Image 1 (spheres, rainbow, N blue to C red):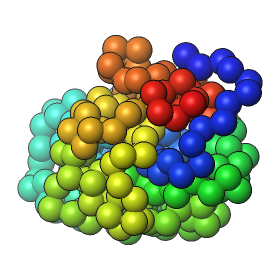
Image 2: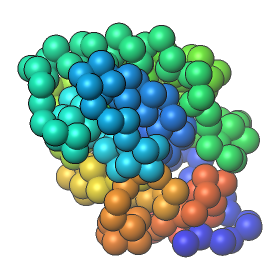
Image 3: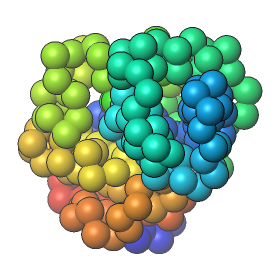
Length: 231
């Protein structure tokens, strides 16, 4: 956990952020869409906390887990995925908001000259729509959703492909996320990783094996300063 107040991370360092559970709390709108499709098939709605534990591996995994938790798949996953995305598209930012400290911290990073990008397993289209709808897109040089490349987290190619998009290398880059996928992808790409403890994972962030763990987004600058080569 970082608590330094006088941190000056390398201004050339590229910062890659996960989306759901790291930059923005998307769980309320994801739960609304998932519960909508569950109800259409005569299933009980899931509690918000239960849905949070299903997030992180993309829409298909979340849908499959949601239906398995309520009695099994009633249709092909592709049909369920398309219907889920149809429902979700109408309410992407109805209740989704940035976490506390996100906007101010990103503004400071941007002013300091950090190249920044979003690396998420969420599909590209809703990821971009959320960033635009919440006026966060202005901070990022690129967004790589789970369907932008042939691979996605935990594959390190998701990170290295995104770094190429923003013209950065792995020598000065850090991944920030809330899941084991973020840590595994960072390790595979050979870059440091910071975990946030407030996200959607069932496993405590302290057990991820990240290089640093923070309890709030505004602790990230101090955490960056503790990483070798970034202080």
